[in-house]
Image 1 (cartoon, helix red, strand yellow):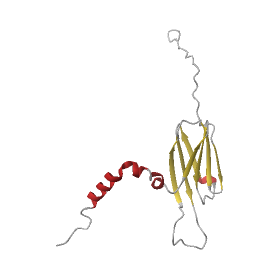
Image 2 (cartoon, rainbow, N blue to C red):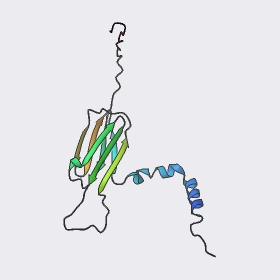
Image 3 (cartoon, rainbow, N blue to C red):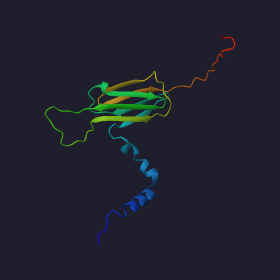
Image 4 (cartoon, helix red, strand yellow):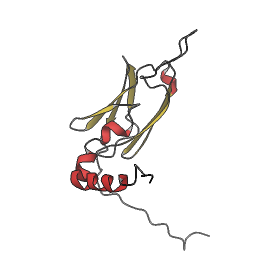
Length: 146
């Protein structure tokens, strides 16, 4: 009689998930999210500093940064090639990467500065302060138009 060694795997996984719960696994999300671009986010009074670890970036032109309200997107490519050598073990990420970062608040799209130093990409953003001033809206009189 042949026994299926993975027959009870589904039950085991359900019990494991039930015992630890979603809160337990959510704590590990930063480690599983995207290990190719580790990041820290720092918050000041009206600004945010996003720091991404990108070792091996050769040209800053290999990174594209986009911002849309509360979302920061960083895309790029890291190319670690050493002439006359072939890789036999890989522990440092290389290749294309893409990271979408949700920011704690909307930022000004015209006040963003980015720099790269010692393997770190620093992105400095400023909070979009709501303008509470009342704005008058002009009404177009279509009866007067011909």
